[in-house]
Image (cartoon, rainbow, N blue to C red; front, side, top):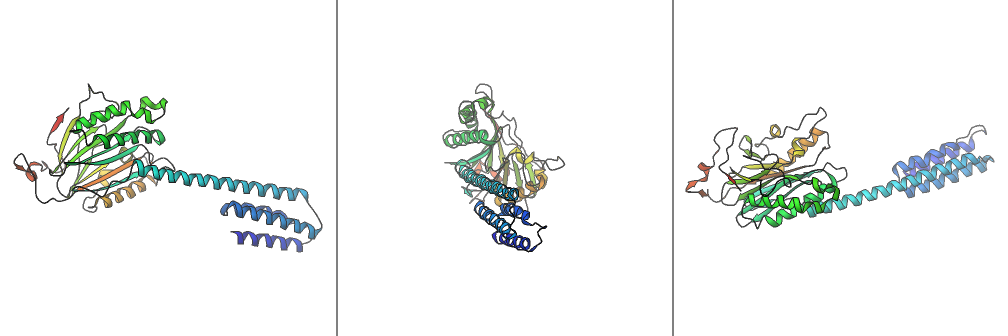
Amino acid sequence: MLTVALLLILTITLIDVQEPGSVHLGDLLIMVPAIASWHASSRVTALVTIMAVWALMAICLVRNSVNPPQVAALIATSVAVTIARYLAERRQRKLVQLRVVAETAQRAILPPLPGRLGPLRLASVYLAAEEEAHIGGDFYAAVRTPTGTRLIIGDVRGKGLPAVGGAAHIIGTFRDAARRLATLPELAAYLDSSVRSGAPEAVAAEQAEEVFATAVILEIPDDEPLVRSVTCGHPSPLLLRANDVVTLEAGQPAPPLGLGTMAQTAYHLDTFGLRAKDTLLLYTDGAIEARNADGAFYPLVKRLNPQNHRHPAALLNHVRGDLLNHVGGRLGDDAALIAIERQPAGGTPSVDGQTARHRYAPPGAGSWTPLARETQ
């Protein structure tokens, strides 16, 4: 850019000093600092500004004609574009710093799930709607227990920093309580109480009474071909098996976390079969409520092909790309997705004297019946 600016200054200067007195090209020098500021740094722009002023003064000396308004206009314009470029660089540096902070916060609050947990292969992806942000109100976490793996995925009301505070509080509470509480209904009740009593401390005071979160809490035992879940106002997981994509509908979903009460809310435990090579897809409503230019929602179930995306990471890469293509590159709400594949074990475990292969087989294509529902 500096070379181009120098050539422009040199060309304008040489032409101007050789032209008749009635032709003045020195006014064109005013455009050189402006052009330089589009692509060059503030320092280069300042250097170009000084050289343009020198060139104009040289033209005035050669022509023996000084035009004060012309010189003043060049100096004022050059100083203005240089300052504007400097301020733009400062803003860019701040954006870079904010991006670094956001990435650090994401790794600390919402790190990617490990690729393996016990007999499970996992993959996760987070897409934030907030411009220049990397994390929002959607959250997920996974914890190993002595008998299996517990996971949570959810969505805190709102976007931006207030939602981040609520999500961080729920993630921390889940990681602590998932190893201590015996059942998922107990864990859900504890999280609900924690959101109502503790999450408001993580957000602004004027928003304290509005904090709540939808969530699905799951437990996948190591030695049983099943998954247990408690749903709190959240979209149902999807099961990918062979050529089928089946929605695991909750029997009686509970209210979102933070809206229930210990005395009134009953948390129902749903149990579904999860065999080797089955894949669970968990997601937040930012994925299924994403609209394209025509206002159509993203058809997640129709876009899934279990045969083409066996590995969890490949499945999420496909969904992520297809979702962003559907919305034109930018989501209107945060979206988080988790893919979980159960790996084959050494043998088929038994449950109550019956082989899991028969006990947990689906009743028919296109439907799925929970094995049991327990209520706390």
